[in-house]
Length: 280
Image (cartoon, rainbow, N blue to C red; front, side, top):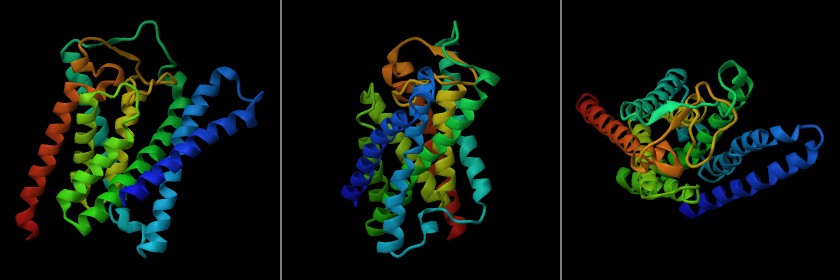
């Protein structure tokens, strides 16, 4: 299963490299050269959709299941999506707030990218792109790998192996450090527990998308080692110890992110245990 998942991820990587090259070839002389980096990045986000297609094919044609069994159940899908998105934004906001309390946050001067209403167009496109990218990763990691391995072995095995896979897929990101690996694992464990508790994937997809979007395009920081300079709501700067700020990888590799993710995991575990007697 994990080998197949790595093949799917490699297939995306190949498409992610080819599509921007084709895009550049087809649009040369049409898209201004100064805008190419933005459209190239947006295209890479949308190309994550290629991950989902082979997963859907395996689920329907080989496993004989409905796509909804990945966690896309219709009842309460909108409320679950909104809750997940608010949680993603809220937890990222908590990380930024902690850094601000430690005086590691300041306003970027001069501005390094379009801000506010001037960035409305790019922000809308990037939000859609992050929804595609995050949903594809969740479909592969938590919708398929987590559920299949949990059913075949047990929930603990599903959480551990799907989290290892998720971390491995991010191992080539710029600025990966020990803290980056740790927090990527905590992020994966949190979402795995969240999916198992809610028995749906809508919230996890929205959480992941808003986590990335708020980090890069609400507050203006790097996302998993990838610089964001295409538009943001507020343009903030970070300074201080790498242990707090995450260094080259960004806020996701700092101690505030560790703390917030550990609190999130503890809350999910607590709520799940409190709900067990009632369900029994």
